[in-house]
Image: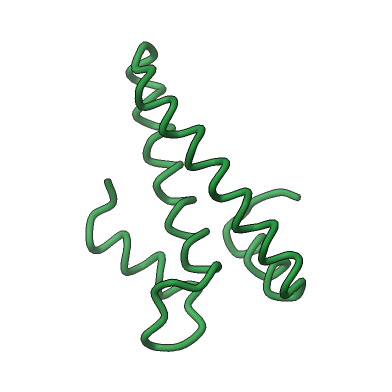
Length: 88
């Protein structure tokens, strides 16, 4: 679960306009932050298989958003990948 501060920082970094909360860029950014937090949790709690399943679902969801973004707007996709530090 992301705190309000982490969530707002993730949104501010990639939003398209001031009221943007649902664009693919914002959704990928939020999912990336959640994945990072959950990965830290799973390093400490290795047998938490329910959280591991949630992590895999988030990764799949992020992959779908990235695939959509790459198809619709390749420049925005490349910028987002570089900004979030994801590899192709």
